[in-house]
Length: 251
Image 1 (tube, rainbow, N blue to C red):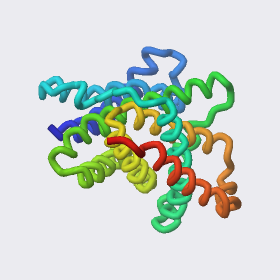
Image 2: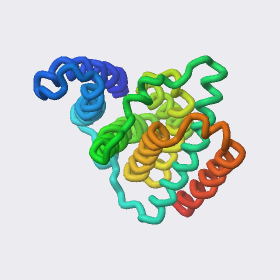
Image 3: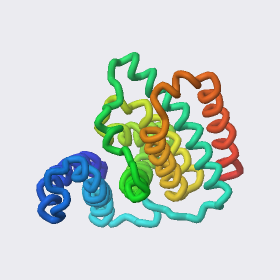
Image 4: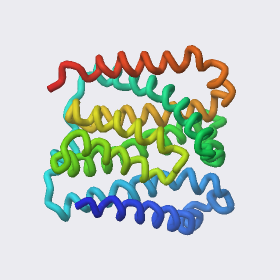
């Protein structure tokens, strides 16, 4: 049933192309505004192009939705610790991303960063929904839900998580973001495994996306190099300590 991965990638691009054509016809305000077309496109692309294929695959395969997409309750304090650990990990992978760009000559595309800039409270609210929360939900349902549920029983925990993280990285179609997506994907898969719930990885994914918004809008690039002596150790400590505390005592 892993045919859903290439199908999802095709659906992703097809939905993006269709939205670029249909969106301006449905919403006159989008006409001639490529940035707004791209931003509003997050909704159909993530919900139709990313989420729907895995739901259809589950329906065709007659699998147990609750087993593939478990939404078991997670204690509020554990969720807070998961969010805090993700904040620390985001600090660490920010530096890894920079080092990867220097080593490979693949800088993170500036047009992606420019796309998610916000200037008013309304724009911030829209960005949080379109860039942080909707993608977190849709992408986690596919990767930590459908893909991980299919791979771990067949390949074992280690290879199942590693391959899930790799697929998660490939689905973003950004070679410059490979370190971010692979490392983040491993953490999200581990949270899904330890908690037995989709709630933790969705919350962690939304946290990472929100921090990416904050970084693009509020933190100058020079900040990271200037403050590496304390920001990087802080990220390591937060991730290591809160990550351990958030998932300990789980069976």
